[in-house]
Image (tube, rainbow, N blue to C red; front, side, top):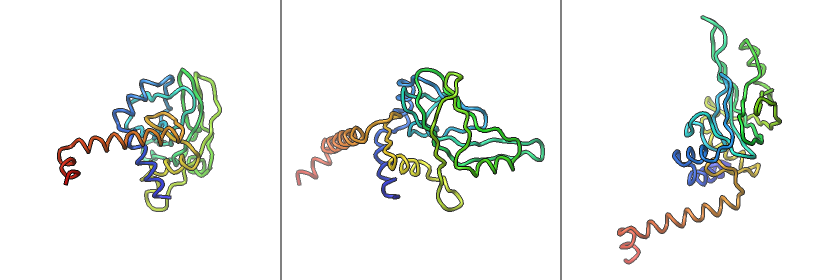
Length: 203
């Protein structure tokens, strides 16, 4: 399973450079994504939120975001930070504004009970109207840092569900494989053009 994760991550890495991912996300965006305070966006259509600028761009049609609750509650000495597991949300959108908020809670005890559930009542609205969405709670891995390799875990989940992205766009597997072959051929040709490579080939 880990080998598959690395394979998918490598393939996506051929397309998902920081510059190109952000450019594609902005150029092709027909909608923007914003969240309530305390809702952290981790991935947008297979691209790490760290490689994107806000507001996040969404494409026309099917979209996938990974979010989690990361919120401070309480006051004074009782103030504390609560975190949920990452959740994969899937939905369709057109041109407009999409907004995501987390279920409401006031105490850590309430938050902990809420975070134990496989599904939460996320508030997902598009142009101020609630929309349907799918959700999946990422289980994480055993150990002190269950989500340290979240990109690999997301790649495994997407591959298992037949979901593939390139430069922030959802694509079919055949498209991804074709693009990978072209990229690999191009890189191979560039290496052959190198004087050192030519010398090695000649000997």
